[in-house]
Image (tube, rainbow, N blue to C red; front, side, top):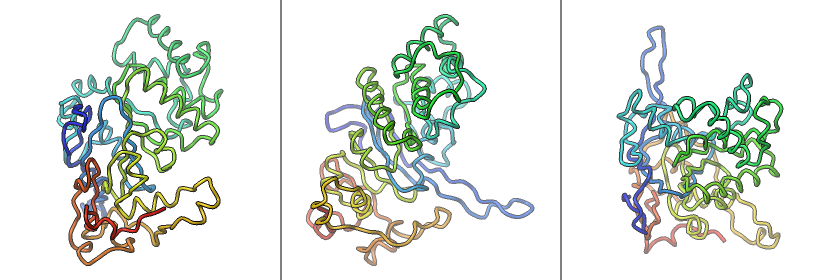
Length: 342
């Protein structure tokens, strides 16, 4: 994992050995008896103007990763560098100033907007926090942002309950853009929306990225949507990244068994091809992050697991050019040992 992309571009966000463990306390004295290892040693970069998709099952640590990067959760270990500055070491005013460059679009458009505030107040609040412009300038900026996200600029005096889910998510996007950030964490921004509205929000985000050059960490469990919007994709399982590469390579030649199982769950809109392709169906449930298995965290559900998988943690390594995988069976010569999906 380097500071530069294959084109020589320097990383905007650099995550190294990131861990977010939540303590388990029991008894009258609240003794520390263990930890929920929601995020357990992540390494990845996000480059300026790109979309990095982060996918995995519910409960694998995706949302916790996004919140830890923005320091909404203070990481247990590791570093998060933004434009070369370590956010983990920052406190108070210094961190508050850095947050102007980093924003978040939350998953639930019904819960993330204050029902007691007007749309104008919601969108202008980040500008007030960072003392940007006068009151009239902020009002003009709010109208401009509402127009940018496809809403009537004269809706500023309305309340969230007067809007549909898709419109509320657009308000959330406008709020995130209010302070001109260079990086936005999108925490499943379309999962609570109707399918017909999802495409509108995704197209809006792509248009804004082209216009403003903002980088996204796009968190989702829908692989087809991630394939559509992302330049690179990181696959996460039980707090670990198990595969990381560009989207075309990931879907054409997945190296990790878990990635193959996710890909096989995506329906193909062609009946004949759907019947012919080989499925990779997992059995059982993911282990508890409070008691992860030894060795590879995926080995209890992996049909290809060998003895080595049960005792040795596989490193996330470059198996092919710009294609990283955390699997003992994935290598240049022996990649065929992992069943390829049609």
